[in-house]
Length: 409
Ligand SMILES: Cc1ncc(COP(=O)(O)O)c(C=O)c1O
Image (cartoon, rainbow, N blue to C red):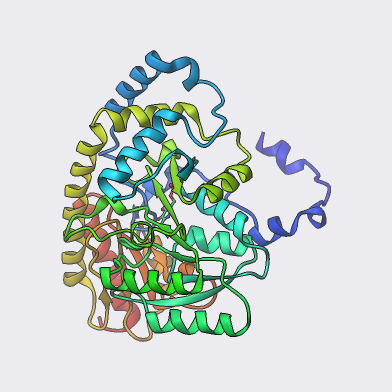
């Protein structure tokens, strides 16, 4: 098979590709997703494998198919199967403080699809969007693929810096133009782990309302708070239809079910749905997730996850304190998966990653989280996927590499 492929001759067609395909560039064809297990992997946003609720999902599948198999195995035209939309309405009101009705909700193939559709709906090549920086690398990709001009707004410990947001908005207003939206991850941000304070959220909403600026609120880690009190969502604080709120089952049920959602004003949901070209989000996975959420299993499961990730976070922070050389600093997340490392002066993340990889540890370079330059002295480490012992071992290895490069050994 491989030989036949090697001998095949393919007509050169790339000049016929659309601008969108050229801007997006090639994807990772043939990648074996299981290859991350070959190293201690601090690199992805992978949920812990040992807690995946396999037996509960088998049971939810049985119940869902016995009760509603005829529809669970059909196309699911529309904005989401009614059972899952109802469970989302309940969850959003109970946990997020978001009151949403059927016309406000679109169920998607992961939050990724929701983000991709929002870019398609709002962004023509050359349009300006505003984003926190560093920002989620999936969104960096959608920005490139859609030809967005990203104005990056730096983060401090409480969120994007208000003076920078204000300056950008005033500059756009002076040019007689508007940004299409502001992208942010308010809780346990990917990649830095920071959470926007209540005060900062209110200031951002006030500015957004003054300038008619939509906010794309990507709350992928909302449920995984293991320390401190929850802070109101931008969606709840706004209440005028400026916020598009995205969530996902990936981090709390399974990334493999590929289920996420958007909550927004009805006209936005209707247009996003119009751009969705898959005849509806999978009814099978949706039925299973609806059963999993409706039976109360989801709530119990999230409690376990929070406990686990809290412990993992502590193990990673302790290991960093023990093994990182002077001049290294890092964030202290109160939920989610990620710690953001600033390397000692003169040490480059591009030098750390291959050396760590050779010694069996995967880490992610900070440069992936910017649309232009930035992050050369940063690493993102995820504590979600590995055991406590692996975290200790892995951090020790990364610490050794950084020490060697810093010349402090
Ligand atoms: C901030 C953020 N948004 C969106 C996603 C994508 O989520 P999904 O698996 O639902 O597509 C991720 C996944 O890592 C994420 O970290």
